[in-house]
Length: 279
Image 1 (tube, helix red, strand yellow):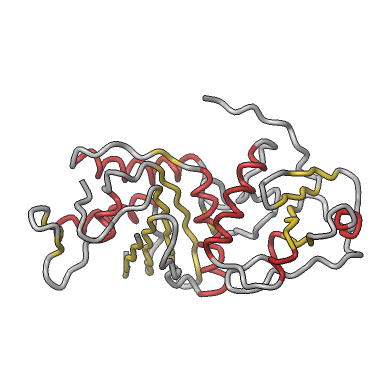
Image 2 (image 1 turned 90 degrees about the horizontal axis):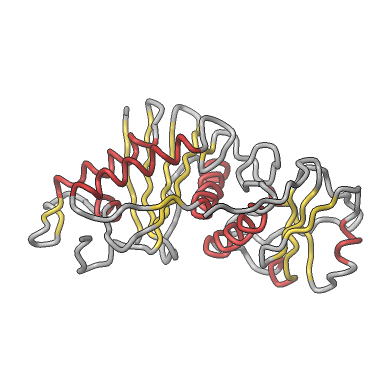
């Protein structure tokens, strides 16, 4: 890796076979309506006068959600959100976006649709990889992220993490935002509901294992006896990797120009609390 930097913050399911060609409307609670016939936005709003429609690819952090024009026809294969009118009057925060993504992913999963699916086009995630994405992605990336984490955790006697598709969807949304709006800079994740590790790398392609291994290298700077990092060094990202109370993991990667890669992982419950040992 040419250069890198890390950041941290604190049974089977039955599926209905949805049509990839149908427009889908998701409300704020994650309920999904599939529309197989052409329909204008005003027809949906007339039954929900206290709400508005927006296209999923128009949603961004720190901006008010734009309303879909009433005369606009919902496009096949696209995903739309039906939101309370209050959402159009205030900037959308990162926690708001993550909550919306998690509820939507739960509802869409029953249709066999993933928020990061290239076919459904809910969010333009080219070169963003999470649990599903449009480049090298999917189960292999999830296994690589998970295997590298659990190997580090096993080394200190900590239980295994489980992969969370909902967390992966949330990280994919954030990675997409950082790629499209911020040039793959670190996301501002202060006061986030999940634990967060980030890695910025340039000069070469960064695989999931390479990202996790970079975080785990900080183990050499962590002194368990004093629960502190070596002088002039950081070890917070390592502590989050092996935090004993974290049980779920979801990660995504985004690639920007000049071979810059941003890796983001969410951990639930969060860890890395000041004054507490990771295990």
